[in-house]
Image 1 (tube, helix red, strand yellow):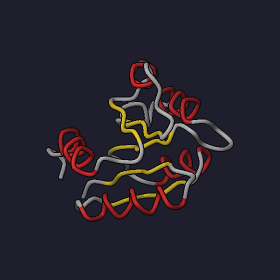
Image 2 (cartoon, rainbow, N blue to C red):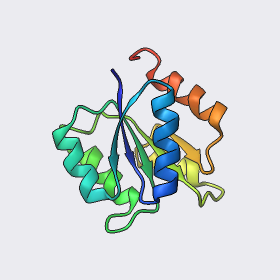
Image 3 (cartoon, rainbow, N blue to C red):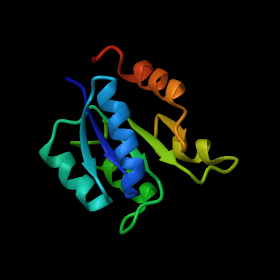
Image 4 (cartoon, one colour):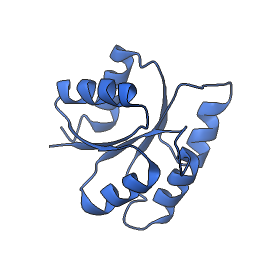
Length: 123
């Protein structure tokens, strides 16, 4: 089963994202900050990371840099999640190492299609 790590500090956003992912048939691992995410990446077999960019302790871009600099995690695809989208953010996240970008609130249909595009062959 495909396993997705959701890194999200807002409990309401986490619950919505987890509910959506589970309804699509994915297994979900949750992390409320970057330090927890790094630990989960060592403990779990993760196929995709959904990464909130606005995080406490370690911001999303710093966490992304750590993920991409580690041989054991660098090949895991990362999709950025953020509510504060500004012009050019998507290019900034892609150039930092994300494969794609999803703005919050999540467009449910588009979100499912995006996940299927990246994970369809794994499910």
